[in-house]
Length: 258
Ligand code: 13P
Image 1 (cartoon, protein in one colour):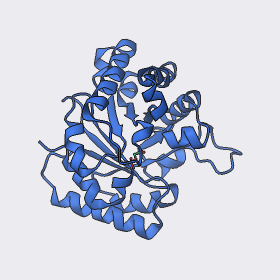
Image 2 (tube, rainbow, N blue to C red):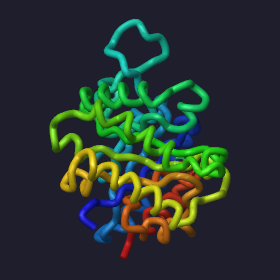
Image 3 (tube, helix red, strand yellow):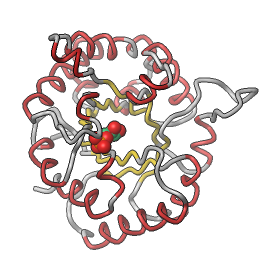
Image 4 (cartoon, rainbow, N blue to C red):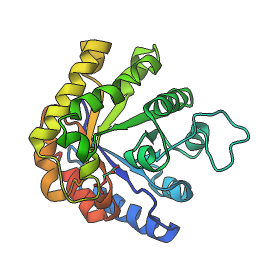
């Protein structure tokens, strides 16, 4: 595969400083034990309050740091919001955008997500744009329509710069699989990932489309990671619950080893 695998931990709204320290310590220890092995890229996205401390702890390691959300706006009067620059300032290189929890609980639509993507690129971050259908949408046969709409919204807002386009990461997270223990079958994941890849080819051309990574998220665990990651258009995982236990997160990272 020409794309490097990426396993990203989305800690969501979990982790006081002590727990965050213990968790990242466990991840670093496990990665140290895997030194010399051909492992995938590893990213952790702690809650805002723990990012700086986690960043200090992972300094000098291969683990990357990301935010879970950011504002579309430039610095100014936006109480409770943070800019992408604030994330890069404390060592983040990635930001998750448009997670289904933000779409469903905080009213983020695809247009807002696209504007946030512009801001993320502007501020030097690699966006991880989340997409995915609800159970109702899947059961009424609308999965690919929903995915088409969500992915189409970002194309007009992509930067012209080819290298930046190639950095883009998409995360397919079927809403019905998030935190439910119900994982998409590897075939269901591959079907949607292949559909997204085809859209990328049509819009951005073969070269860029072959570089963009598409992650799967939704109840990924150590015992199902390898089979999901074995699918040709699945380039890694966006992990929720299992990213909160070092042993489980490491087990998922191991899913990438040959
Ligand atoms: P779970 O792994 O807990 O299902 O969460 C997935 C997710 O939402 C990651 O962003």
